[in-house]
Image (cartoon, rainbow, N blue to C red; front, side):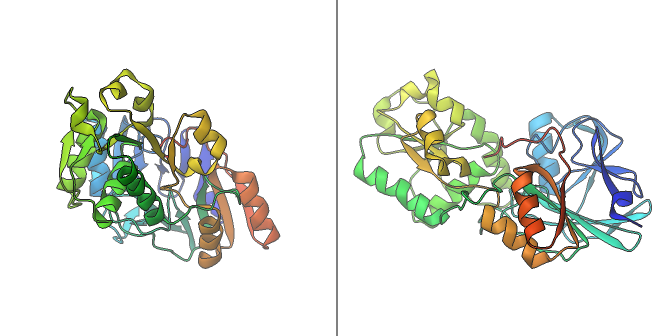
Length: 334
């Protein structure tokens, strides 16, 4: 069986014919296997959703308990038969509950990475490389310019700024799922024990992380109207909130933004970011290419992102590669 007979793109998403299911479909389908909880991969309205317990909990928190007709929990490493295909979920290291989906049929193995990173993350299990015939990868930061620095150095930069400007609040723009909790956990590992304040959009998912066993330390809602209460404080908020009226309650706030895109200085400047923090939940160029070398697949398929550059690199390294050009995915989590 050729790989294209096992998985191929349709308007709904990546379809597995032997198992009659879709992976991260962008339209409602009868059976969806979901890699992680970010909304460009996890959508409501499917007949049945199979995902890790954490991803199912995230989807319920975001869309309501009736986000799908039925749900099926997949434990990491557990093999399941669906039609003529066998599937299992293995850690992707992206966010809590994120998984690669391993599909086997007709003597072939295809691994669909979803979004992933190779950095250590205290809030989720690390990426697990799986040997395969076809590796289906993302390419969000698939340009050589994107080489992310050490996360701990970026956190140290934030803590230095707080020490140097204790009269100012530091507003850290971060995506609500994954990035916010990772920043909090990294701050705790760096020895920061003070209360961290949260925009309302962050509270529910931080509570969910803690219910799933990820300790985040003392947190509080950023609700007081007294500016002096936030002098020297860290406030985690959605990036858009930094330019909103909401931000006026804080004393001379330092606008910080945690994202892999902060490697592009013009992007930081254009966004009015005073303290860019290059912290990403996606693999950078070296991690993308290093992962492909480590796995050594027969073919590489690229779902979304800077696919041309990664396909060109693969060709120069003797690997067959092709962009799938799937629609509906974006960089909202970075």
